[in-house]
Length: 376
Image (cartoon, rainbow, N blue to C red; front, side):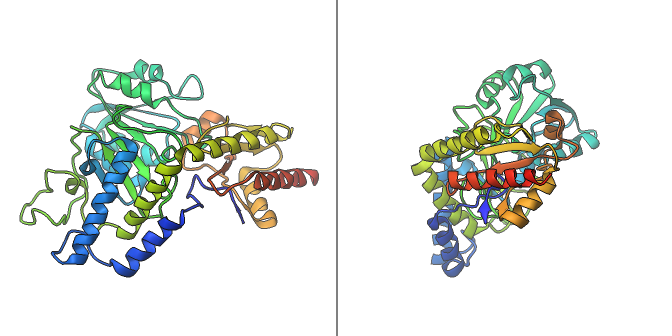
């Protein structure tokens, strides 16, 4: 099957990412740092090395600021529930995934925050869009770096610069951006960066990352064993233990380390490759009169479109069943972005690339779309 659904889960994994996970399952079925024996100590060392690798990749000052979570949704929940202040004003945008929207809606439903959702004047969210909505009571801004629907890149740097002059904390959803565009918590003045291991970081499923900037105080929202301070009724004061209750997913952490190491060595090529593929597909789609495009060329490898005569789900099913091509149809867990794009009635088709994809595969997709349209 031609796999064009990499924005959901990356189809390309470096061999070492897979081998590292398999090796951990075969040889390191232990709890990292929870016992004094050699295997536990070895696992703990690998976990710490992975924190160091991720910290270096995204500009965190120290390994302890790298928190492992179940996935990016979990990281966003930990950050949002740990940083909001009861009674405060929170800003987010229409470009967000439900992983951001639903936690904020829940806090709003409880009456614990007031919520403003920005609709940008242009395709991307800019600092001036955020500045218009700031109040003296704004304590939290949550913004995705790249839309998972159409690949639009928001202005993280200038929003971070703006918020650094206020009391508001800045959470960035980097699920679709990391591994494709540069994200740096220090340079971009991000307080909490949330990442998905199984997408651009080229790890297996089951691992997310919350990366904190120095001085950010996240209140724990999950409680349990940490291997330290066992007689304390409260979670430890220090990171990462403060936010990591329970057993870590060691195979996924090992895979993450290998994936980030691969990215560190190949990030320039990856960005060039995905940008080239989006440019090529968009140039082909523009020639088809029955296609409406919602994406511009982008480094995140996302192209969103609709067919004049078929719903996005119909296109998705036909491509899968008849042509063995995997794309995403529907709403992509981002309802407000679909309303913004006016695709809320039937959703949209999303093609998303990774390193294994080729122009030959894109040509096969275009041929399939032409053949489907010929039978109308």
